[in-house]
Image 1 (cartoon, helix red, strand yellow):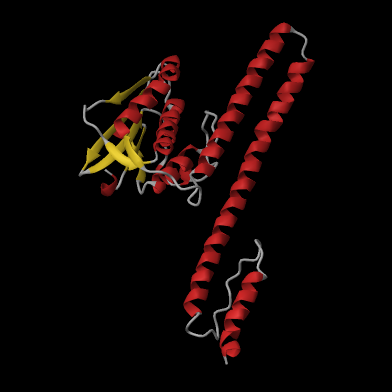
Image 2 (cartoon, helix red, strand yellow):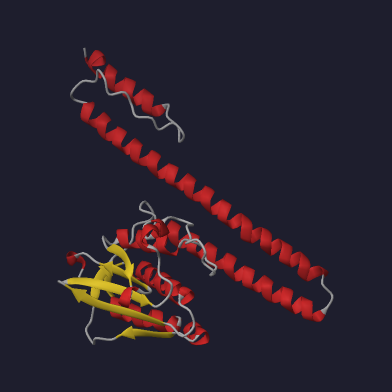
Length: 278
């Protein structure tokens, strides 16, 4: 009697035992005793989450391999030109182009690593109190030299108030650096970039406002996709900056919005944190 009662459980155990990493189909729930049906249902939910996670990882690896192929091929060609060129001026120009290509490839790899670290199922993040106003000042200091070289007025609005949330300091630093980097990169010489940390209705708010070309309304959602870049952009980039920003915002339960800047020109990116994180 005991053996007959345990037979369905042994059958389910056998099905699970035979599954591999590439065979994550749900276990058949029909005809199961009521005692183990909830267990099998929970197992099937876990299998579906694992399948979604593995599919996302495969897509990420495929996208990363595709995007890395072009800059690595360019580096190889430029290295060959550098080796074969004997004229000093040509060697200097080839060397400068090689360094620029290497910087672009390095930036792409850094962005890919940042995106991977902030995947939903990545290692658990430790949340501690983080001063957003201090992060804003740090980001402005980090990009001050680049902004001066382009003739851009970059600054942080200082209200004198502390703006603190619970979060991952490194992840939030990456989020803000990506926003400021995009703003400085796409704002033309003579433009302005303002970084602000404040509160609205009891919720912490980060914003980056620029006087660049902005993003058309019909593309403001698509720019959060991995490797997507607005058509006609003259600036080089990985197409990962805003994808990373949204991923980190989701990790903190925050919302990211894109809207036109002052007077309908430029772009304003806002990150609004939930009230409980303040």
